[in-house]
Length: 316
Image (cartoon, rainbow, N blue to C red; front, side, top):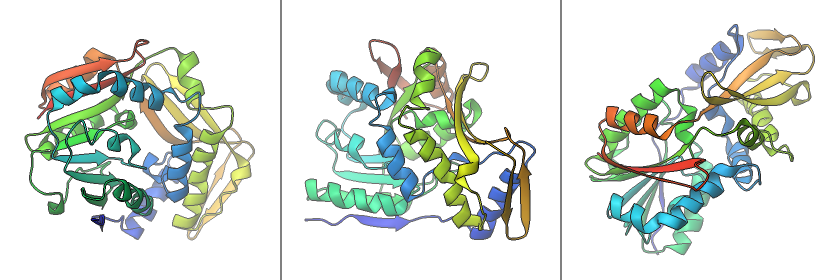
C-alpha cells in the first residue's frame, strides 16, 4: 500500500501574521481573514456544520453530483491528477475518483495536521492511488509545488468556498486557477442567491455549531498573538447583506470588553463587532461571465431543482 506524502509549502511568518491580526483587531471596523477560523478544532467544527439540517450547501451539492455525475465526468474528462482545494476531510473528492479515473490525488488545505489525518484514512481505502497532501494557504496566491507533477490537472473547488472572496478577489483567484489547471479543467461549486429565510439559518443554526465555529476564532487568536479574549463576552451574528449579495459573519461584544495582548490592547464597546467571514451568493449568468473573464471556456452548469446551488465545469 502506498503512503500519503505531506508537504508544507508555506507557513505564515509569525511576526507578519501577528502584525496582520493586530492590524485587523485595531482597525476602526475590526475584521479578520476567514482562514483563521480553520485551526484543527475549527476544521472539525466546520465538518459538523455540513451535517446540520439548516446547512443546505453540502447536501444540495452532493445531490447535484449524484444526479449528474455521468454528465459532469463527460464534460470534465479523465482527471489523472485531481487537485482538491480546501480538501478538509477529502470525502467530496473521494466520491469522484472512479467517475473521473483519478490516478493521483492532491489534497490542499491550510490545516496541515487535519489534512494528514484525512489522507491516512483515505489511503487505506485506496491503497494503490498516489496521494499528496499540500499544506498551503491559497487565499492570496495559488501556486502549486512541483511535487504535484505536470498537467493537465483538474482543480476541484467544491462547497461554495469561492464565496469567501469578493467578486474582484474571485476573479483574481480564478485567473490563478486557470494557470494551475495547466490545460486541464475546473470543477467548482457555487452557492446561488435565494430567500433570506433559507440563507440566514444556514449560518446561524439552532444547535449553535456555527456559533461555536465562529467563537473558536477567539481561542485561536489567544494562541496566535497571546491575547486574552473571553468567549463569554462575545456572541455570533450572521445576516444577509443584500446590497453586497453576501452572508456576513461577525462576533459581537455582548458587554464592554477590554482585550489585551503583548504590546497592545483594544477596548470594544457593547455591540461592537469583529467581521470574520463573507459568503457571496451568485447568479448563474454572473458567475459564468466571471469564468470567461478568467480565461475558461466550454463552461457547463448543473443546478438542483430549487436553484439553490450550482456546479460549474470549465476548461482551461
